[in-house]
Image 1 (cartoon, rainbow, N blue to C red):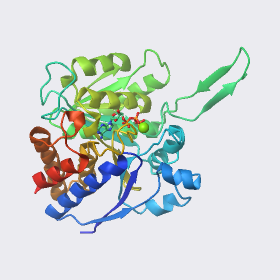
Image 2 (image 1 turned 45 degrees about the vertical axis):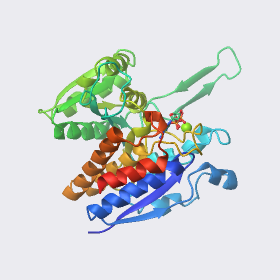
Image 3 (image 1 turned 90 degrees about the vertical axis):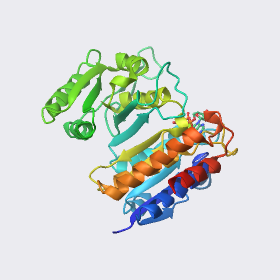
Image 4 (image 1 turned 30 degrees about the vertical axis):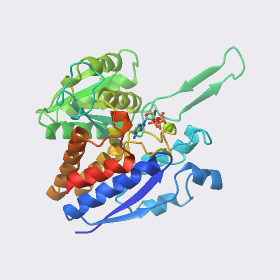
Length: 359
Ligand code: ATP
Ligand code: MG
């Protein structure tokens, strides 16, 4: 088997603390399941690089990375010295757009040992996949300002939905729903308020659903959907949403399932034309950086998602994914855990414990 080529970019803040633990468990799982990996570390796409060079990445970043199978990414952001829109648009958002990573997938599960902020919820009640469209929709840069500085000052920003963009995310979502035991899909809409774009989204959902008669599906307006996430999270399986709605839901979901320190995510180019990117949901957390108390589980779970994606259905890769998730569950129950989960452990203690549980 050819080795998977993985670019490792730790980034800023706690990205630098959780990345070694992600790599530790990734390499341990690869050894155990005999999966050849070739890791290469890149020391850019972080704010120290920006402060030295006036840009987040070298000009040839695209050529340097495009031959990799995946990017394993920590976090970016140093808001005290570099505005977030500069660091984000100069790195992570370039990867997502230029590598056409149009599927943003975030599994949301209530894990054993994790306190749930929702009352009376037990393990098994929350188990969903949130799929966010990652390249178009509300986050277009189309628009502008008119009559600036006058009483008529007007600002517009357009949403852009293409048939290609909408259909490919819906297809991914229905395929995933079709492979899961519950075979249920929920679409987020707002066709009562956004009277052009969202009715189109709904139409495309209905058209796509015809190809998947085994999948039961429904749709909710985004406002009531956020309420349902909190009041009845057990009714959701696969949830698909546009860029903005998906952004909101994919923060709300992990929050309903406990700490942000364990939530993983994948930014995928399913056709594999370009590398896909795997990263924790959390950011660089400057407030706790430097103390070595960041929870590395989101990073480690992202490694499991990466192996699963790289295997493309291969049984050893699926086994490696499942073994990492099982090791995470064991450590969440038995400890050691970091302060965000009420423990006293430091970041490497958790990484080492998960590595040991894997063995
Ligand atoms: P973003 O980078 O998405 O803009 P942010 O910078 O606002 O997010 P985060 O960096 O994710 O937010 O941090 C939000 C809060 O969660 C902070 O208080 C941070 O300390 C905490 N936090 C984030 N990640 C972790 C982690 N891995 N372990 C423990 N606490 C974390
Ligand atoms: Mg941040």
